[in-house]
Structures are given as C-alpha cells and as structure tokens.
Image (cartoon, rainbow, N blue to C red; front, top):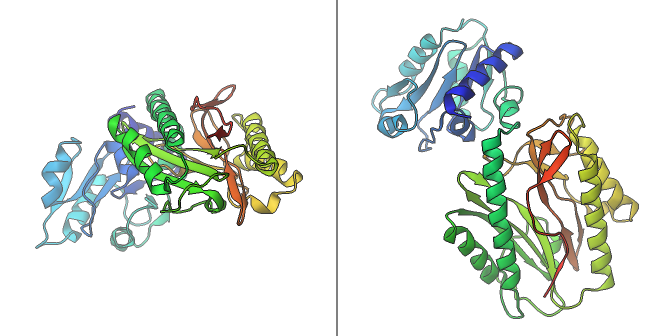
Length: 363
C-alpha cells in the first residue's frame, strides 16, 4: 500500500473513531504513513493529519531531505525563529476546530514535542494511536507480508550459519559475528543477536559476551535482521553433544506449547487465549514459574509492535496480523529453551514464516 492510500485509510479510520486530528512524531508511524524518516534530534518534527489536510512541521535544515520522500506540504521553521509560529500555521491549515478537538498523539513521540502540541490545543481530548494508526499497521497488506517472509527466510540462513559456527572454544561474540555477516552479505542489516551458551540461556535477554562454548553446553540463539525495510525474529536451540534427558524433556514441553498456541490462533480469537494455551502446557508440566514473559509480540516495521500476545491483552486477532509465538522455560544455573515462530494470521489460521524446524541442533 502506498503512502497516499495509507493516509486515505487513516482518514476513514479517523471518521469511524471520531478523531479530528492525528499527530505523528519522527517514528515508524511516520515512515508507515508517508515514507519520511527524518533525522531525529531535539528539533520538533510532526505530521498532522485531519479530514481535509496532511502536512509536516519540519525544521528548515531537514526540509530538502524530507521532500525527497513526500510531496505533502511542509511548514518549515528555523533555529532562529523556533517552532511555535510554524505550528500555529500548520494547525490553521488542518482546518480543525481548535476549541475541543479529539486528537491522537504518537505514543513514541518525544514528550517535549507532544507538550508543544498540547499547549497549542489546551482543550483537546487526547489518546494514543491504538485505534487509528496502530490499528492499521497491525493488519499487514500482501506486500508487507512478502517482505516479512523474505526477511524470515534470510534469518533461517543466518541461524544455520550460527549453528555451523558452534564448536568448543568459540565465544558467543564469535558466533554473533558470523550471524551478522550473513545479513550484511545478503543486503540486510543486523538487528539483534542473542547468543547464549550454557546457563546464560536462562536469562531471556542475555547480552552476548565472551563466554566460551564447552562440551555438553546448551545453546540458545535469538536473532534477527532487517531486509527491505522489514525485520525478522526467531529463536532456536542447540546442544554440544548428546543432550541430557532434562534438556530433551524441556525442549519437548516448549515445542508442545508452541503447537498449542498455533492451534489456538484464529481470526476472532483474543490474544490472551493464545498466551493461555502456551502457558497451560508449560504449567501442567510443572514449569509454570519458569515461563517468565508473554508468549509473543507483533512484528512489522518495528520488531516489537501490536498485537501483544499476553495474558493481559484483550486484542482480537484479525487476518493480516503478524506476530511471534515464543514460549520458553528458563532454569537458573542450568539452561534455557525458547522456541520462536513468526506467523501471519490467515483466514484459516497462522502461516509460519520460517522453514527451519524447531528441533534442537545436535553439534
């Protein structure tokens, strides 16, 4: 979907939700709606969208660069003048009734940017983007799905390269370097690489370091890159030598939790039901206290975005939503196992993007 049609879609959604104005900061929301990804600093940048107008508040020094990405009008301001007069003109251009408008504010916008706008609209009724921009972003079109699939398939290659680099004496950082090279060699950008040896796998967000791989170590790899604007995300595990019965048992439980979540995920189902399906499998196996996080998160322009697959989420799943399913069991001082799939919600259920099995790689 092109930027102009996304603005049109936003306006339809604004009409459905009684929204007079949407204010977006320099964020992935702005990229989604317009393609503009401005330099971010303390100078206020804003996209304002009303029923009849869409335009930017833009620092003068960024104006020419921003115009390469969008034909929308831009009200510029200079460092010597400050942004207030330019913002007042932009608000006039939107045509909204400024006495008590219903406005949506980008939740990722800097607080000083948001307060600048709110000071100019003291009677505004405000909320975040959940039922407007985020609502639209959560429902991917086929072009986005294609890009996400391609990014995930490249991630399969990066994961296999990571497994191939495992040998006694290698460090976590060594393996991460191999993984990053796969992204760079294939026109992608590395996003993150959690390489966890042994007991480090029991920390869900372990920072890759200089731990040396030893015989009989468990290995957890949670990696992702960004290809053609869209990220990937996947977690798999390996074991140096024949795994213990405990490792194999926990792996089977986590995989069963993934399968339960996949079987539950359907359009119309609430996100918390998917979380409950995975969590029940792990709890009934006696490991409930060792499942430390939500079951998943949305994936799109951002690695983490709505919908969130969590116990406290009443979000109803819809076709086109893309999200992870990633239950885990973390045993302090021993190992951790997390298995993660990214799926597209289709009419008949989830389409798994990765083609890499969830079986543990035995090195």
